[in-house]
Image (cartoon, one colour):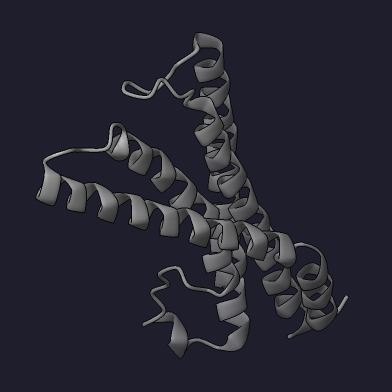
Length: 168
């Protein structure tokens, strides 16, 4: 299978889901911004604070961070130090891509599993936030979905790099 064919199939099926999740991140970030600005202005001018603003901001940060990881990886936005690697042939670069993407896929798969277990235990314990008594586990499940999507993108990128390696 050619690299171009693999990329087109993936982009048409999986990347729209990742884009949607990333757009949800934008909305959550906007809400978080409005809530924080409102809280600061209320404290400044009327000495009143919105109960749970800090708590909601912390929980929304989980959504913002983990929901945007996969989209960033789709566009190769994560840090990649290729100062030395640029000097090697495309074949060696593809080999390093296969190795690094595979290792990252494995690590994020483990991370997905570990966070899933943590979310399950939080659900069992009935863990809630301090001020608003919101259940915490749904936000941890968002982290599970974000890590799983990132692992999927890393797996796809490893396959693409492997196909490039085999074609060269």
